[in-house]
Length: 292
Image 1: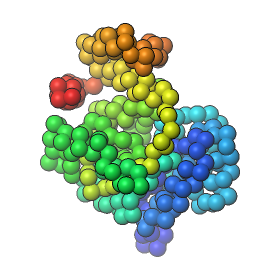
Image 2 (image 1 turned 90 degrees about the vertical axis):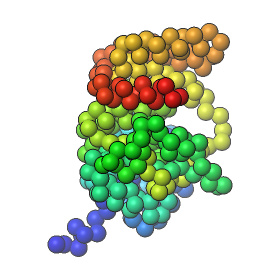
Image 3 (image 1 turned 120 degrees about the vertical axis):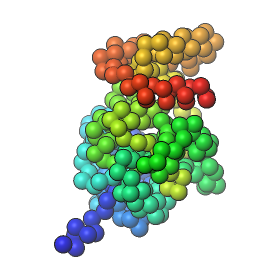
Image 4 (image 1 turned 30 degrees about the horizontal axis):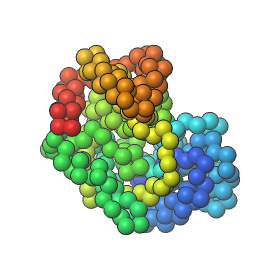
């Protein structure tokens, strides 16, 4: 066997970015120093601050894809398609992987053929505070299936996920309709629809240093995407109930009002790609709702 075949990394990293050059360069410093030596692909979502040029100049081994428009979360799918590794880890321009974690993720994916995506532990900021999502995933009411290495989940943080590349592409990746903000649940549903498992694996660790400034419109996008996900994959009764809840909130909450208006605008496109989840998966979604 050729040495190159032995040494070829099994995990690649896809980073999406837009107008955050300095933050991205800091992240790439961390990613390119990892002992696993992952292939790194940056998808530049139409930055106007010289991001692509700066990356090519400082990190010539990093592949930069410039689609010429803002693909948002769907840019991760462009990056995954460009990789030839078995597994793909996702980072944002303000997140990176703890040394050794990508190797640990690859071993878990090797050992569990049905595992389509694993959700890592997230440590936030210089203080490495546990993200509140960690405990929610660790205590998922979906329990642990015998052929998966951790508790089953139907949600995760995109910048702390490692996926089986073939499973990710089979599921269609992150849906282009949703953009960034709560886009993960739909992908988890689609992976499970195709028979892949999604599990929380706390021994795999990602670091996140989120920007401290305001994030205008973030709450509205998350709530909009939750409603669109319901119309894309849930039965009519569930989607109508979610719509009624958001409409009630919109009477007093400006973010809910904006979310509802944006969801209504995008609803025809959502209905055009509607594909209700199978009954077993719908039961799991209802269990999660009952525990919320």
